[in-house]
Length: 406
Image (cartoon, rainbow, N blue to C red; front, side, top):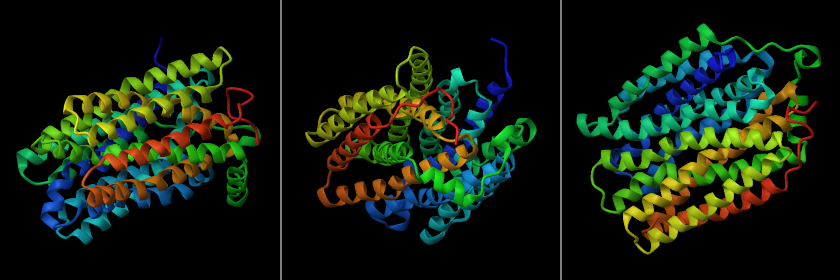
């Protein structure tokens, strides 16, 4: 197949996710060093991890609409430049309060990306490749997760400090900004879709549809399960006796690496199923059911102190479905969203979903502080994922495999 412009967009948006996740997830394997330096508890460390997610979540409300209203390309360039500078600034954090503040402001810069990158992919991707485009361009998130968690631990072990990790990880952010400036065009629109929608009307529509609300709440459940393991797997491995930041980071980072084929395969299968007349929501529900079972099994394995090999198998198995859910999920969301406000809908979905990041790391850390085990936190995550499965099954079926009209 000859290279098309939409392939370029998929690649650049995917590289942007690598740069974002390098900055976001580097802190996970470094929490042990940070806890020792600033003398903080597991619960407080969970709050620090979530600092970037608090502001990221809030930024989802305006970010998608800003792209709908003023153009996505400029917003993407501004955001990537901003988090490049803030990642560099993290090197200077010599107090816990300053570190928390820098992570919080970095989240604001990160927050403009999702609501403008996902709609950009939708705008240029042929309808018959909708989930495939979402999956391939989202592999950057999985690769960024893997590279951040693994390389951060290795760099910290070699240098003996966590600060310079953020200086090195800022470089891809600057490259992303240049690539967007050089190669991404503002998606063109014609007809009624080209008329800007006023903010009140856009949000009223995005918040007034039952199926969109089911998708928003299911996204919350999915991200809750994701952030429990993404935050605490390095610490879980430390509890199991695996010593060294790099060793725990390598094992935890495999979640992202195995997520790459999960995203690509699920996207292709979802598109193929839709072409044969099957509902896309069934694929999402199937992935969520398996994810629920694996999360509960991992909690039980930790409770009974099963061998680390078994826990790793369950963990890596969950990696395929953790990321595999997102390709059909975002494709279905774009099919349900009115085309004039697709950025607004994606932003709201991510806002409501990422509210889980305000809860999951801290609550799971509190359970660990209280019970001495991560098992309870995984049981809670499994229950939340089960509810998400039911919500997806309740979603109606789009009448066509393109975004519905207003």
